[in-house]
Image (tube, rainbow, N blue to C red; front, side):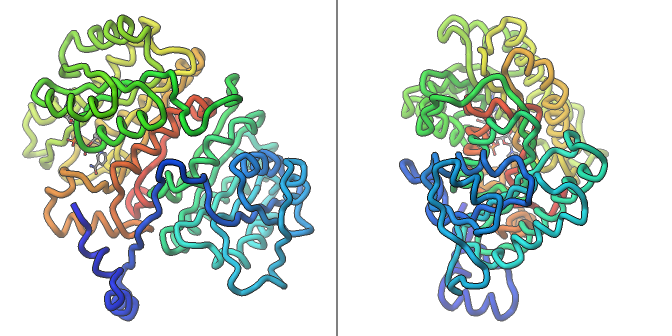
Length: 469
Ligand SMILES: NC(=O)c1ccc[n+]([C@@H]2O[C@H](COP(=O)([O-])OP(=O)(O)OC[C@H]3O[C@@H](n4cnc5c(N)ncnc54)[C@H](O)[C@@H]3O)[C@@H](O)[C@H]2O)c1
């Protein structure tokens, strides 16, 4: 449903009134349209001395043909030159007051102890107010677990608080992310940096993601159609977020197999028919559902490359008033069915090499929610499943990850009481709800064959909700 408040505060009079009385001022977020460049505007690249990630970042910026700026005395300048970039010179002292950046990218991996955190302050202090609308702040670091000792681990961990605070300070639809890149994982940065730089990550902010090493490289990938030649199963695909996931994966070149319950067969066929995909009609909680799914995928597609567990339901009641059926149904659909399907697909080797399982969790699973003990348990369980299955799945060169959406504008949230709906919309750094496509874009990033370095991770698509950290 449309966000009337957002429309109102973006009228000339609404802007003046909301500013004067200090109301939230959500801006229209830039979202990706087919054929757009990854980033449209100048990028400032910087690095703390002795870092190991500016080179990898510069290579990605070169690949996306970004207009790159660096300071003269910054390690990032030689990294940019090595990547073949003819970077413009940036100087805080002499810069034009009007100079703005679409993205600030900072390699913090060289920060070896807490005193050196000053390098991050020094890079962002003169630049943070120069971030454009829907701009990007991206900090690259070393995972504390991979650090050379306690002092480095401490300083790298400190970056989390720094970046999450930037997410809460930047305005006008800008976002901030921390990307930890493990040792030997520098070559896995590209898909994540492209996603975070681009308008595809419009509603993702304040996130910390860890990239690990992977034997599979992204060499030769067609970034416009990363799913070309691949098949993708999407459960609950006929409407809402599932429909957007099917559309985005089809845009990326996948053959989409849309799955939904018999009652929604005609809606499913209409949605998936438009995308040139195929359908599978069944209830995922049926006893034989995992076998039927595996057989269908093996018989018609020789296996599957991407599985998106999106089907989900709510049956809200406070615990004392919740019926057995309400508890059992939510756990069965949202969690147990995913486990059973995964187990069957793995046992039958139906998930191909470089395959992806992407699960849909929820902010309720992160933070808990009154009236949702069943739903929050199921969605927290999804996160547990992702963490616990990742090592095993990783051995077969596949990955499993989850997205946890916050407030997304769907039929489900349109049906909320107005006070709950308004609170959900505004209580995040972007002061608005996300769209189904925002969840779909995050899933497409995880589903990309270039995202082999992401395994066992969870990213929230919640505009940096104030709830649940
Ligand atoms: N809308 C939000 O704000 C929000 C927030 C967080 C998480 N989520 C999660 O996102 C996912 C999609 O949510 P949505 O808002 O699009 O909901 P929706 O109700 O519009 O769509 C859910 C789909 O799942 C299908 N489904 C339900 N039970 C099924 C079963 N047993 N077998 C097969 N298919 C089944 C439904 O038929 C429907 O097509 C869910 O997992 C939900 O929990 C949504």
